[in-house]
Length: 322
Image (cartoon, rainbow, N blue to C red; front, side, top):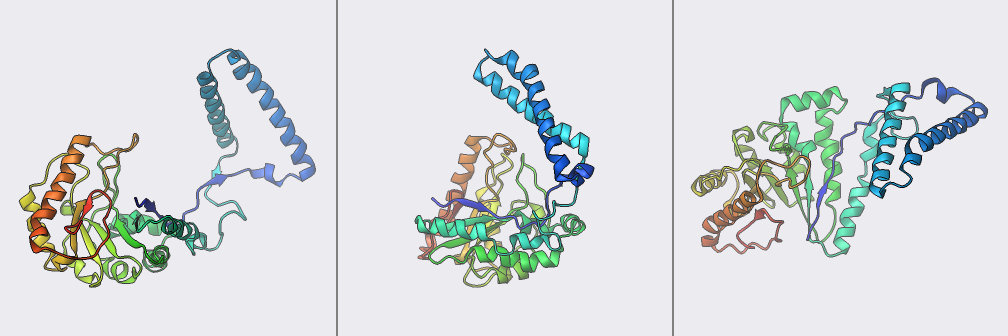
């Protein structure tokens, strides 16, 4: 089974600890002071925290250790503060994009999956998906991430991951999926030309079209003729079941911009079945949503007896030839 891979080429470095004057001390003074500090903190921790728990259950000791770590972290932040400047020598100073320039880790992972027999890899790309929203664009610009650069160098970085022979690559343009909430609204008009035409190594585009914030199907006309488009028409955020006839009508509407043979249907995003950030939708509803997807697939494509040689996609992204 193909793994869902996430690549986020966002060149925003995390904040680092501001050690201030301590970092400027000569090594001959900094070393003994550091050792003395560790000894004192260790002794206090032993007598105050661990010694009273000597005969306690292992779980109590584990919780106490986590508490010590949190207190230590908070103490350092209170004592020294933070800085928005990355530590010299760790992250690129002049051009943070250099850190992601060759997408080495993602390329290696995709190649490793191919060696293990994986034939389909899907990239989740909220970094590109949220560019359709003017507010998100403005935020990224304020953080030093130019939109034009994201749609050129950023697209090239992600596209390079898909350069693996024998593997079909899909790109999901995610607009946010946390506790049934989204983070971007708008159509694909402003990004279609750059993303669809430049992603030469990707065979499938999975797009969110679950409600009015998704825009029209007109940008799909920019998708090259050798690419598939999976329409995320079924909401993975809300429990309401979409009428099958409405989904069929929307597919036929999209077929005015992309040939029906190159279209598919799916849920708008994953169901996010996690303990933190899970969507407000039950497992029973999730199953019914997937069954609805299958019903529409059979209704729209099966009568046409398509014979398109395509791989089987992960659950929730179905085509008639599966």
